[in-house]
Length: 198
Length: 86
Image (tube, rainbow over all chains, first blue to last red; front, side):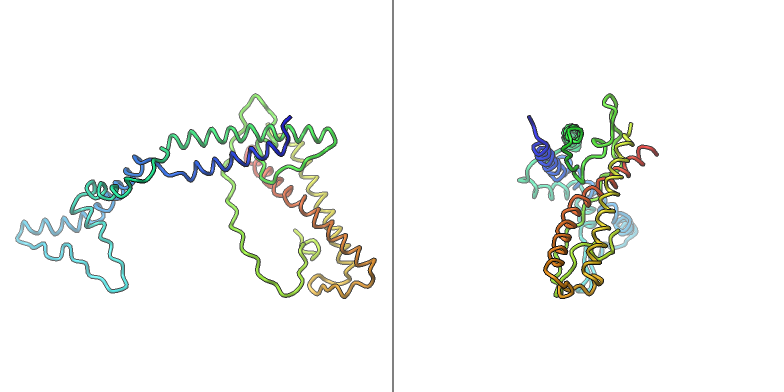
């Protein structure tokens, strides 16, 4: 018979796999499309300026200064708009994407959504099984503490024929724990002892 | 459908544990005989009293380990229940 510890281990393992799906790279096609979109944006940003120079040539104007960059030593010069506009966003995008040739294929948005949905469903199933186990243990007189991060749908939803409403927003990620500062004096470890408990 | 009875039971369990912790905290401060800000083991007069304080601190720590996750869970359940009800 499966124990609550085994269920919790399975839930933890599934959550790790779910995080891996979230953190996995996007597909090559999506990456290339994102690079191209960026190059198009860069080109559009400089379009009016270049158009002004080029239109002037028709009236005897000069292109001198078109590709000139004046900058102080500490300032940043962004050549992307010039490059994208002059050589074309598609050419710049292809050129940039050559550098990604060896990167592994990632997940498309559809694949990612599908895998996340499958993981969420499996996790919820396990959490429902865990809650049943906890309730049975309570009835048997051997209560088991629930996890602080238990899915509220698993704990509170009581209509097995109906899908529990989704949680509106994912819980905020806990902030990374700050390293404890060294303290000289002996410190009371509990706010209850200090009389400042919430 | 939300199991509001279960939610109420869990809220009550948290309230009880929290109250127990408050009571133990008061008892701790009474035994120590001064505020935690100026706490020093030197204020404890006898070995028996020292042992009592030590045991109380241990029990507070244990109960806090049970209470804190329960408090987080109850807060999460309350948010979910109010979201579904809205």
